[in-house]
Structures are given as C-alpha cells and as structure tokens.
Amino acid sequence: MTWPRKLALWLCGATSALIAVMLVISVATGATQEAHEYTVAPADYAASLLAAPAATRLLFGVDVAFLILYTVLFVALAAHLARRGAPRPLLYLAVGTICVVAMIDAVEDHHILSLLDLAEHGGLPSDGAMTFQQTLSATKFSLSTLALVCFGLAIPRDRRLGSLLAGFLIVGTLATTVLSTAASPDLRAQLDHGRWIGFLVGFVLAGAWLRGEPDS
Image 1 (cartoon, rainbow, N blue to C red):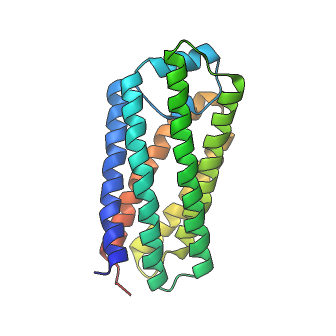
Image 2: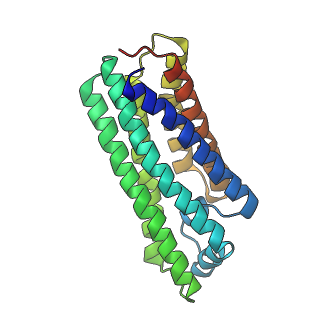
C-alpha cells in the first residue's frame, strides 16, 4: 500500500474518532461550537459561553486537533488521486482551498475562546465581534463546499463506492450549503447537527472507498 493511501486511510479513522468525541462532549455537556457562530443578543451570547466553559475549551481543543488532521488527510487524498490520474489543476484548487478552510477554522476557534475569556471577566461581545464570527463561519463552510466538490469531481467513478462518494461530496455538500444559507434562524440548530453527522458519514465512506482502491 502506497503512503498516500495508507496515510489517508488511517486519518479517515482518526478524524472520524475525533468527530465522535466532539459529538459526545456536546451531547453530555451542551457545549457546542455552532451556538457561537451566529449573532444574538450580547448577554445571551456571553451566557451561552459561560454555561459550560471547561467543556467548551475541551471541545475547541479537540477541534484544533481535528482541523490539523483533516488538512493532512486531504493532502494525502490528493496525492492518491493524482496517482489515479485525477486532473492536477482540480487537485491544486481542492488542496489550496482546504488549507484556507483550516486556517479560518483555527481563527474561528481562537476567536470564540477569546470571547469566552472576555465573558469570564465580565465583558460582553460587541456586535462587531459577533457579526465577524458569523461571517467567518459562513465563509468557512462556503469554501469547504468548494473544496469538497473539487474532491468529489476528482474521485474515480469506476466502482460503485466511488460513484457514491463522489455523489455525496458533490450533491450532498452543495445541498447542505444551500439549505444552511437559506434556513431561518429557528432551523439552524438542526442543520448544524446534521452537518456534523454528514462529516462523520463522509469520512467513514471515504475510508471504505480507500480500502478497495488500487495504489496506482
């Protein structure tokens, strides 16, 4: 097994495990990242951060590890797809975009943690801080859709599992982005939870596809 496929396969398992850990933390403590990605009343935003500060910090700590691993995963996946003859310009766009997504993800995590520190010292987030956070999160998900669609287009569809993975990455992510952008505020929580389930399904599906892949 070549190093790109071996590394990508291992990281599919590792990223899936981290998603499961974050879901367990959220269910057990009520701490979520998504609750802090939207503009609300400043007092409500601060109260939400202060509801479970230790769990929130743990959640974001795991998310930092997650963003590091998924970045390496997609680089390894691109290397494997290049060996399989995928168009190089498409892979360059996909990997470049996913690196930008990871950078935005890191800024987002540390920005929310800085707002938690502010709330613990009695401060309230400003309207500018919250609207910046919402814009940052929405931009991250829009760019992640671009990257995943590029990867979906690069997936060989010579096996049924490849066609399924390609369809999931192209149609599934585009549909999720449209629904999330157009949804009313009262539907955001359900869609955000569905997005994380989608991430988990995607990594598991990618791992299953990689297992049956040739090395060249």
